[in-house]
Image (tube, rainbow, N blue to C red; front, side):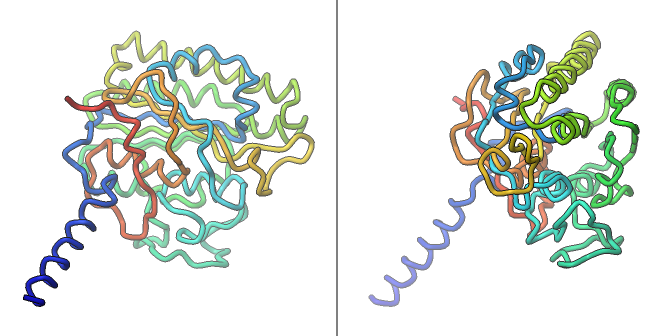
Length: 313
């Protein structure tokens, strides 16, 4: 009798383990995507997002879910946080501790590496899971690519001197040219962060930089709509850190560590705020979930915020 009770307890425990962590295993609830376009603006604080006028981003977010309490990783600086967004892991896993990180300047070794010595990113996961997927990475801060293996990126484009408009055009052309294939595009600009450093977070110049980016985001999205490529695309918007007026960033205040994060597209709730806890390490996990990937590295720590999805009847 005791032995039977122990077996019941054991199998109940195993069932409980399986029922937990549903963001990683509830594959039957996923909404498979055709393409993901991830727009990243550097250094956007929640206060800055609220103060700036960005009608195009507002219209985009009206089609999806927005979080204004997403927590980033520490330290609240650029490279560790973008790495965390796109690798589903924090610095304690990937080992990128500062903006000066390179493969030749490692202080804390990552706990997992590919054959070229890079921590596994969303681009690697997609390339290994989906043979015909096309990936692109557009950026204008030179060091940003240092923590990602370019082997898994089909189009890599750097634009200097804080310029970013040409990359928006390249991203559009890439999407059109590969519209029949699954696509993952990361479209990034650092000019908003530089405006904060040069003039102060919440300065008129900083707010203007966000509003200028919104104009180009609007033109980019309108072109996709004109091509009939908006409705079956998942868009994401996220950033790496906020900032403290006149002091930049790198600290542990909410102004530096809590940031906007948003997602729109098929199967995503519309016009809602994300109220459950969210973190930057969830970004890559959410993208992999949308693409139906099952090859998630054990080293990844992110989850999928499942309440972003519409409830199936």
